[in-house]
Image (cartoon, rainbow, N blue to C red; front, side):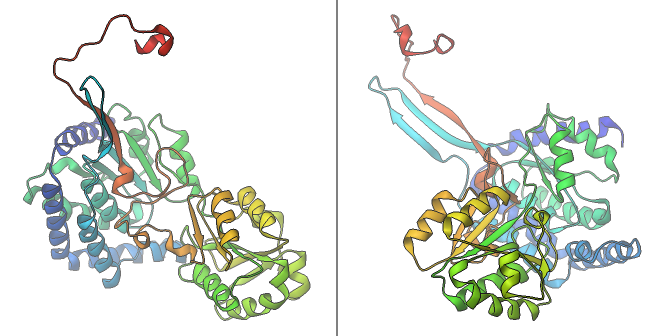
Length: 430
């Protein structure tokens, strides 16, 4: 792909973003409905093309986890459709008055939500990102440039073309959704250089991809590097609930970023609970790696090393550490965690509050599975990913997180007064 081709896509996206910014909520919701309808009409084609790409990936020796992320079956396809329709039902993220007041002189000042503009999505394996990203971006009035992995290029192209047809049938600009159709790293490098046209990049994939994107561009990047998620079982945690939450957090879907990677258990309940926990994880074929205190109770598990506390396994492996109180648990999480999702099992409101206040993560859960932090379970509709950044978005990135704001001021011939107190403002503001 030549540079000018990526540049043309970026320019077209900028033009489409300018048009989208003034569309009504009804127009965007109608477009999302048409996108879902057109997508449903190509279901058989999507499944056929995807099946061929899955076979090719298997022949190239791709991992089982990658194959699972790549595969679209009927259930996954229906889920993708439901996410498009669900995001249409979310409240309009645009034109919200975030702040507003009227000055004594009658000047009306408002802070209103507006789209970011052009969003570039660079991702691996998961074709559902194609539909999620398009849905969230259209809902929030942003144009989107999609760049999926080469292993899913044909699947992503069929999905994108159907949604583009839906946009056109709804009267929105066709270039509001674009997909880079050429495999290879060259096109990505060219997209990273489009800072004149692209407002934000969102990489979805492994730590290596995210690091490469963040270090290779001047465009702001919404990112998360790791999902080293913890569950801390406090001394007063309900035993049955603790085991159930640990199993669900780890085993419901092992290869995702909000799956449990380290279990922390209070010293006061470790001897009673650890055998129950081991039995439950053994039945789910999870390898346990424990600290010295854990090994004293569970004699036949693998010793945990320092590296284990730093590791996002995305695999059937769980590290376990016995801690002496909630302060040590919080200290461990803030030192080794990735700021993604951390949970506590406790019946104490003071423990819950301390954990909530002192754990520095995007999602902090009380007596709930870490697997709930994907956004849909928060009632946010469709989301485009999870951010462990603190600027601009943090946690699930939905339509609201793809907005910024502008100041809007209504006057009636208002003029700047003379004799302003120079000490009341920096000179640059006068």
